[in-house]
Amino acid sequence: MAPLIALIGGWLVLRMAGLLGVDALDGWQPALRGGLALMFVLTGVAHFSAKRRDSLIAMVPPRLPRAPLLVTITGVLELAGSVGLAFPSTAPVAAICLALLLLAMFPANVSAARRQLKIADRPVTPLVPRTLLQVLFVASCIAAAL
Image 1: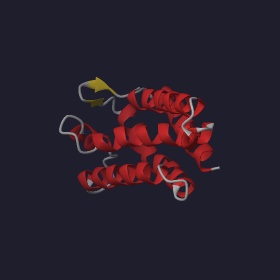
Image 2 (image 1 turned 180 degrees about the horizontal axis):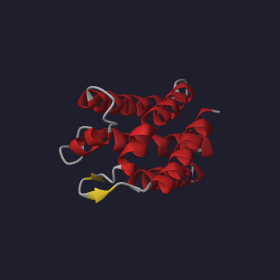
Image 3 (image 1 turned 120 degrees about the horizontal axis):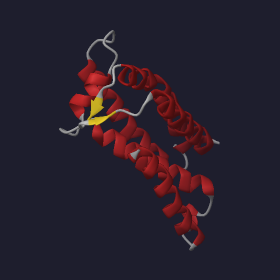
């Protein structure tokens, strides 16, 4: 739920800043890119948080090797993508790359939901709501890329 709040809350705050005269944020797309950047900073940092890292490693489907390395790589990619979203010249490519990353990581969410895992002592989002969130996140990345 925190990523959704970051995306929507970040977008709203930045959109309001644009409407109040911050030229760089004057439009739905720059504000959306900012909201996505906030969301990916939040999720990227979680890959390195002592409280969440072990849970994220457990989410990796058992058939994939080197789960800790995969969690580290995806965290770095999320953080790099959030930086890419901050610059108009790199934002479209960063947004598409982040959409592809979300698709690549989705099997971990499916695996976690099927195995009824927890992240930081909270149950993972059930599969149907998680799928709907994933569609929203991917669509937001695509919209940010256009």
